[in-house]
Image 1 (cartoon, rainbow, N blue to C red):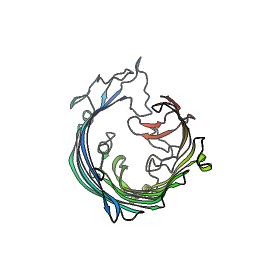
Image 2: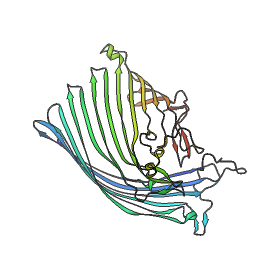
Image 3: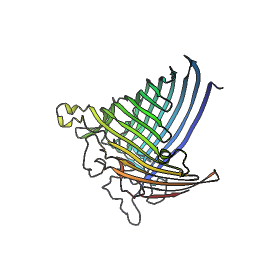
Image 4: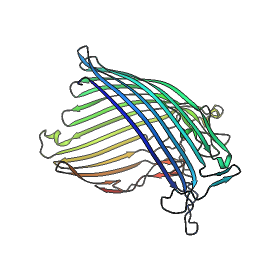
Length: 437
């Protein structure tokens, strides 16, 4: 009815994700072997996930103002079968046929890794927006999570005879948050939010990426909190803006350190990310004349300045060796600036926009290594600028004709580095791409 809304969603995902490739180190050539390429590696995932969510929203009067209560619940059951490392054909097409088994004293196997991951989740939340005055509102909320996870199967069984059987983990997590907003006139407002955060250990972090890697059996879930505040709204009919700051504390980050010459995946410490995010858009024609017949010509800028650094480093070796204490280093894959600038024009049925994206340089490991290693899995990645152009024409209010160019200047750039598939190595961005629809 007018004051209450009830929504029930039931969903299921039954899917596969399959990949075929030559995933050796970047310094090993995928050479022609006679008339054929080297044998491909086959990796397959099978997903079966089912869940339901129930949400209730009700508005009510409080102190002559309209407030709102929101309550929800969720049930979820997920299963992932992950099979990796089968020996495929030498053909160049998409062929999932396994042509050869792995053999060892332990027997013969199709896949090096054959794992089953399970997740059961129940959650409830309650949130209330209290409209205390005409201009001021405050919204506290709390969420309770019950998470049951399991993992078992084979890891490199033909090579080292190892099995994976992680004890079932049951977590109960209570997280809260609160937000506030104060309206300054009809079109602008001040806002602030403070929210707790939780990130459980993932299955990928429980699985060693190489036979020489080790996993800390006391690996802890990550947690933290996020705060943001700002000023946003509209100035007249021509300017829209949002200027804000943020502070993110991330505790028990998971990463890799070297212990006795071998990699150990463990909780490496804590980090703080803080910065400013701002957005402004100006309709130039409306700024000059409110009732213009020339259409809409808008320019916009979205600027983010970020400082993300480690504030605690938990490597025991750092106690006796200050050179291995990386407090103050930049967090990996966190650029110091992300800026977007653009201009758009709309006249009747035609519209076009040109956008420029500037992303700063990043380090790809906590050590802030400058030069790439021989496998190109670590090392600094330079910043880049990419421009995109889009044009659209609307026909009869029902049909779109769209033409666009991504990476207009054909910038050569990279976004990240990968230790495994689809690497290992530097992962390049797409070159100039045209599309028409």
